[in-house]
Image (cartoon, rainbow, N blue to C red; front, top):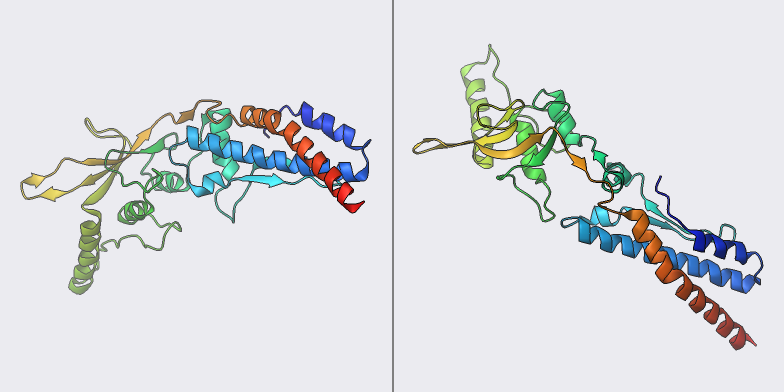
Amino acid sequence: MIKVDTRGVEQTVRELKEMPRRLQFAAVQALTRTALAVREAEQREMRDVFDRPTPFTLNALFVEPATMAKPVAQVGIKDNVGGARSAVSWLRWQVFGGLRTPKAFERLLMQAGAMRSDDRAVPGRFARLDAYGNWSRGQLIQVLSQLRIESSLGSSRSLPRFNFDDRGQDRRRKQGVIRRAYQRAGGEFVALPNGRGRLLPGIYLVRDSAWGRAAPKPILIFVSKAEYEAGRFDFPYVARKAIERNLGPELQRAMQQAMQRRGSAA
């Protein structure tokens, strides 16, 4: 629960009961417009503090408009978006700080023994990133497939395994599937949950070159701490400042519009 000091709003709500109905309606409009201004301010803050936030992140904020029956407008973070991972489950770490929970692909790596349960994954130098700076979904599916991790995160099935009783035709077919997968990925992905030599724990791309085996390229690096500093996304502060800037002017504008409508009706 994110709480914001809304004493100015609460005073306005108390005064609503003493107003004529047309002015009550105007005040309700002002509260809703102020809430919309708060959401816009929060979205601007997201663009400032996050690196290329996705539309999913920017649209994670909802506005519940004020009504005559319930003269309170609310701005919050959606609990769930179309069955996807809850927005509040990851944005809250940016507000309150602390160790973030594992992402879906991290849980799959942990279950497969490719990653320790107390680690978190960050993109390595050779990770493919999308337009928003996040790990490419295509490379994610390639990694899970090559590591033989069954997943519902994509349509690709994991690569085949060789069985003791595989006949020549079956073995050649599996070899072809694996070879083509390596060609598409540019090499073979290997998981080193505990690191190896100078290599940090993570997932690496290994590729054979004409001059011998190339140095492993870090795709993901596993870190023991993925803690966020509290207040990176200062939701309460941004909301308070937006209310201070907008509530008074919106009330004045709504009241003037109500009086103008009354004059026109007369």
